[in-house]
Image 1 (tube, rainbow, N blue to C red):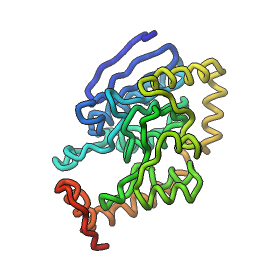
Image 2 (tube, helix red, strand yellow):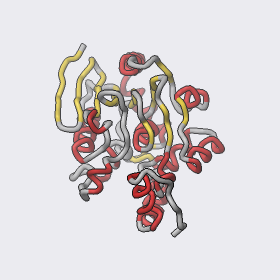
Image 3 (tube, helix red, strand yellow):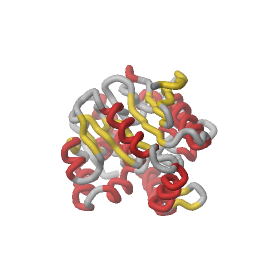
Image 4 (tube, rainbow, N blue to C red):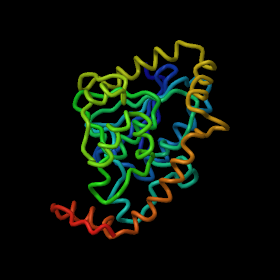
Length: 266
């Protein structure tokens, strides 16, 4: 039963008992992330962390897509995609925003690029049969800079992860389940209910014990996953050079012109 809901630009936030349900709410843009999404999701996560009655969080997308990644039109307009007051929370206000409460991604439909990075940042993942995961950034002259490059290697067997990173090709939800990237595959249209059912199995346990277990399992000190620090530093160092390259300009241009890119390695 929905106890309360807040509809703000970028996301719909609901309470389902002790679970906060966050729905990225830009279906017309396949839930691509802009500043409104980052603000709404980031603020909702912060509220969940501060509310002792919230014991788990489910994040999903409105309509037929989970998240199509960054809003390229907003980038073209030179808009800031991050939370203006909490840029440290990262992409979508989510990927670097640690909270003690378990987070579950209910992945409906498209989840390539930034959508996969949201799933990688979540503690648990439930996905529809039609969902595909992948990090296709190299096909556009970019890298998966929202945690994808180092988290995919942590969460998949190394050779499987490197193939995804190097080829940019997608993985089916069935293969994602086989390799342990996700927890469940469910029929299309049922993923939110399945994620809420999983959340209910968690929230029936002692909350302080669950939250402490998450901190220890993730290696958290003072609200930071210490094992991720070097990965973020390397990502930020590398993405700067990549973004200044001619190939980074050629990738999006070739995509827009519907042709194969001509890479120069410079």
